[in-house]
Image 1 (tube, rainbow, N blue to C red):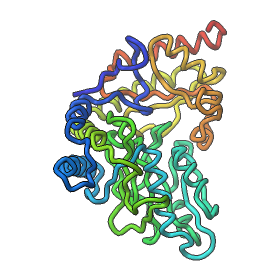
Image 2 (tube, rainbow, N blue to C red):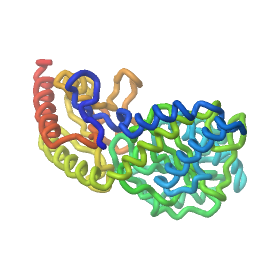
Image 3 (cartoon, one colour):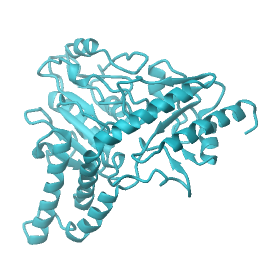
Image 4 (cartoon, rainbow, N blue to C red):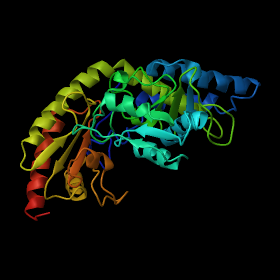
Length: 382
């Protein structure tokens, strides 16, 4: 069963912001309603309702582990993807603080999600190593490997794929020292093609694949040195009472998405190729990100002489819901750190991310709407 791409802000809106969040997948909705009836008890209790809840969350853990290429006992559920990132990366550093002598530090790409960058800034030590990326947003594996061998490095953080421009990172090409763990933020990539197989800790967020909001995933490989960096039991689970229905619904959505993943990704890749070609042909427009080694459903482009928030608003008025990482957006008032890192225009950019049911006609209509909005904005008619 596929998502409804029209499920967006307002009747008739074409929702092209799936990279931010997806509507609840039908499989997740059905499972969530059923789990609310059975998964209310504390799974740590020994009574029958508690054992029932434990069985449900164990089933969810097994399903998610299979999708991530992990063992069930390596997977835990948190209250969000951000919590999973902070627990995962901080836990790796906490377990190895001061390894090799001298100050501790994290090697990371400059295009990581803000939750990763915030975690790096918060971590003690301060001897962190920010790597360069090329114009497509990819790190150089040799540079990562060399930086990981510096004294005092406690972890390396390289994402599976970028949430703003779609570029996949060469994670499986990395050749790190055995003692240096690799943290991989896979939130943007889960459900959109193969995932890296090489990682020490990996995180994801259920609402990115059609699961419920408020469910994050943290997986830590067996044998990895990891310690909980915050108060509480030394487990990969989040704080507080377990969200059993949410975890089960997230697992159900992920199973459904994975079942149709190959066909959906192939169709989306062709549609994004079409979109990239049409938009790149417009005057003073630059399409960013890797042209082929990328997420299949996402494309970002930057437009000269047009504020990104105004272009997003103009497209919204025409019935298309998209995102922008431009300066002076309502949320951050800061330019996109990803676009700045690759040397792209940080104003006038639009991120388009397709749903599983986005059609060719919708893509063509969107391209026409972009051309119209750009012309009107540049002429001062909007």
